[in-house]
Length: 147
Image (cartoon, rainbow, N blue to C red):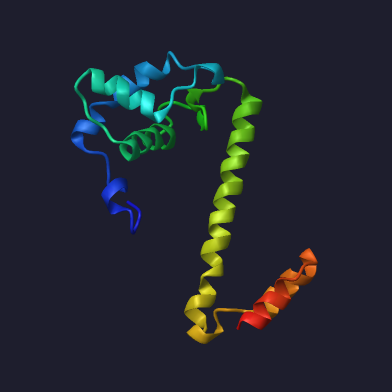
């Protein structure tokens, strides 16, 4: 469970665990990017079976399938989810995930300034000046005249 997102990241329920075989079987028909299936399409397939499942819970089940290594090579893009068999494509996807995780960590790490400094120090004019000089525009002039 993720703090602040408890309503959507709670552990799988017994009913959701029972859906795992359907996900497992279903992804056998979605091998290769050209056979990607979207979250919405997954929910629509379940709805046809009178099973209501929300967008975050589909992601949670897919996360479970990945983390528990029940379906390896289960990747995604804006096209949807699919099982990729090409090791180079899976490697590239893995590297992308690591890069995204590193960016999230960098933002989290930057928030340590908030904890360590008084509130009046949160707007760092010197850092902004460095940025303004790098991009070579009138940002510095704007920020210093508007207060």
